[in-house]
Amino acid sequence: MSLGPPPGDLTGFPLRPPRRTPRTLYRLYWHRNRAGALNSAWNFTSDPPGANRFDLPAPAGTCYWSEVAYGAFVEVFRGLRVIDPSDVDRRRLFVATPPGLRLADTTAARAYSFGVTVGLPAITPYDLPQQWATRLAGLGVDGLVALCRHDPSGHARTVAIFGRAGTPARRARWQVRRTRMDRDPTLTADLRRLGVRTVPIPFTVPTVRP
Image 1 (cartoon, rainbow, N blue to C red):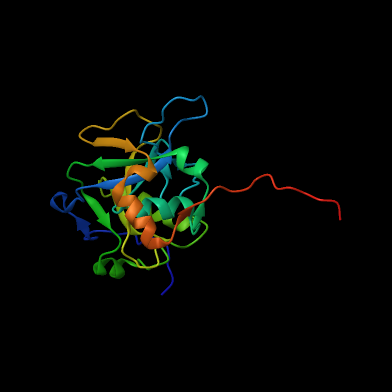
Image 2 (image 1 turned 60 degrees about the horizontal axis):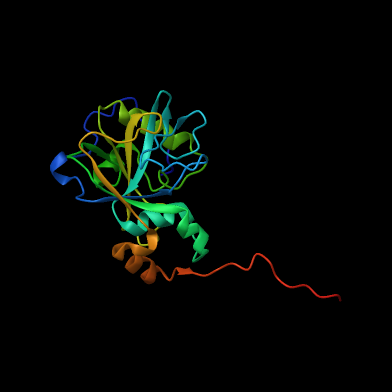
C-alpha cells in the first residue's frame, strides 16, 4: 500500500498520552543567526515555503526534535560520515526536557488502518506529509511522532512540535539547554557507533604545472 492523502475522518487515530512523553528531546541547530546573535532553539517553519516534511500552513508552523541524540544529527547531515570542524563549531545541540505532550503517533501499528505507511517519513516531495500534519494538527494535539528517515535501524523517532510560525525565544514549560556537539557525551557516543568522524577538509590544495 502506497501512502495516500489522509482520510476524511481521523477519529480514533492513535495518540501518545502525556505520561509517555520522552524525558529528553534533542535538536541540532545553528548556534548564531546571520546577524551574529545567539539563535533560539525554536524555529517553527510553515508552508509556504513548506521546506520541511511536516510544515503546517501559515500562520502555524512546526519545530523538529528527535527522541535520541543521533536522530537530530542524521536528520541534519543526512548520510555524511565525515564532517568538518567548522560544521561542529557553527551548530549547537539543544537538549530539552519537555512537559507532558499529547502526540499523534504515526509509528503505532493502529496507524496502518488510517492509511499510514513508511512512506510518510520518506516520500518526496513533501506535499502528502504536510497534508497529514495539517489534518493531525486538527485533532488538537501538540505534535506528531514519526520514524526518522535517515536512521536505518528504525530506532530514532522524530517529534514534530506544532506552534505559531516564527522563532520565539522560549516555549512555556520547556526547559532547554545548549551544548557543543563535541561536548555532549550522549551524542559523542552515538556518532562513534555510527562511524562518524570530524576531519578538516582541505579546501586549498597545492597545484603543480602538468
